Length: 115
Length: 455
Ligand SMILES: Cc1cc2nc3c(=O)[nH]c(=O)nc-3n(C[C@H](O)[C@H](O)[C@H](O)COP(=O)(O)OP(=O)(O)OC[C@H]3O[C@@H](n4cnc5c(N)ncnc54)[C@H](O)[C@@H]3O)c2cc1C
Image 1 (cartoon, rainbow over the protein chains, first blue to last red):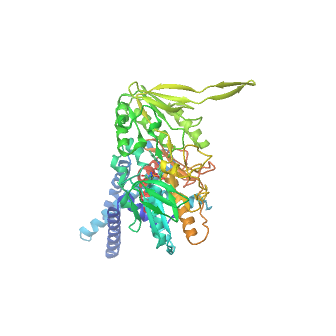
Image 2: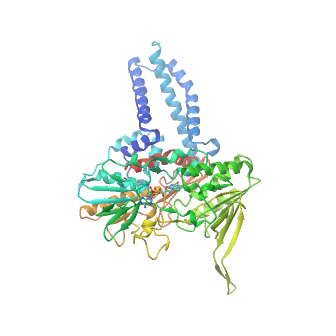
Image 3: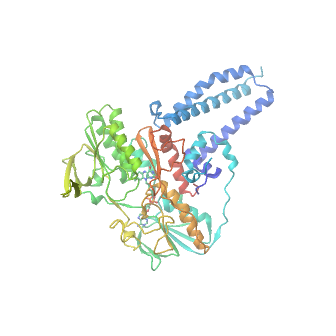
């Protein structure tokens, strides 16, 4: 099969993380996203206080994501070899930052009383 | 966007990987593939070899065909993910990284005969196993890989690997791990590291070069590079068969201070003296109208660490089958297939997948990934009395590791064209982190998906 399909993509992801872990991670991502949408709908607005804390968490998410990727691939900042590598690094950092921010915001909304 | 055939067809997983990194959400719109209806047939299909190619095609055929008797013959219980050997020998993965069980990848509907094939008779259309079982076939797929002829290196014994500075990355996962121990010990102190490749066709012609780069990197990391010499002995006048890649590699070796010796073919080693002997073939030169003949000579080079890679040929059973080319690669035994359809030129009910094919390029797992759909197409079409349309263009891929953390994603075809999967995004001749990330994380999953017939 030479053509890119969602099925191929899922097959590769399953192999990359192991079937169980892949679907577990997908499940967690779905649950967090749904929870995030749920609190937004429930509260009818974005709480700026919670958003502030979420924003403060972003650099940590970014750094953690980059170190995680470098750790599992035995590589480091010295291996950045061209512009595309910088883009990949930024994408990883952005994914980590946004992911953690959403998690922190959602967690606050679910755990704390509405403010 | 212009429709590059490579962008569409090359190793989807690499794009999958990028897409994955990018979130991949938009891809949901691509939907599920249109599944072809199963083809009913009573054909008897025998596959010789359950490695990368045999396993992949077995899964594809099991899915495509209904009623066929599919038998796969291979005596090896362990499946080896061979591209992982380089990472094992680099100390980055344990030996187990490359090992899984052959049976675990095979579909239930396929009958696995756990024996080696001892005879293939394309006239009588039979395969006989080492245990004497005779299997009749209507269609035969040869996917027996290649044989490493360790006897072709005098004085070398696999039992030496890991000791006295001797490595053999190709020999298997445990030997790759033993090679790492020898290389790790060598790079602690430094000395002369010696690398070479055989003069025969070989699988993954980039692997000998990668290991030279990796060893150089460890010497640098450990601060012993200054005290060391890294020698690469090429079997002819080039480091790599694709000219533009060859030029780039020459530049990189110059940059790393690698001492290149051309026209050196490894003949044997003396493990006690720690020397390797190379044959330098006879040559002729014309200067000022006068022809000078230089006879073949031998050259001995001392080493502290060596990675031995032996000559490679088709397995004996294939060499004796009458399926090999008579006038090409004489003595090596690769089978006489059409280079576009991978169908045998004299026996149209025989196909080849993988390293066994007598074609000018493509002894890599990445090529196997392209062989499988071509053979599937032509075989299934034949079963329906039709002609297949898929074509193999020689696609070969070699993630050339240039140090731990960086690689070049080199992809090319029969014409020596570079055929990058991500043109304009990942430059094939640049040492990049992203190319390393792919080698490290995406290639094995892609390979495994290929084994399952899913990529
Ligand atoms: C060190 C190293 C590094 C590599 N790096 C890369 C890389 O980076 N990228 C890449 O794409 N490729 C790489 N390769 C090459 C890749 O592994 C092979 O090209 C690929 O496995 C070929 O698949 P195959 O099915 O032809 O052979 P194999 O996967 O070798 O399978 C052949 C099978 O045939 C069986 N067999 C042999 N004789 C018989 C018999 N008489 N009867 C029945 N069965 C038999 C064997 O037991 C085996 O299971 C590398 C290989 C090595 C050794």
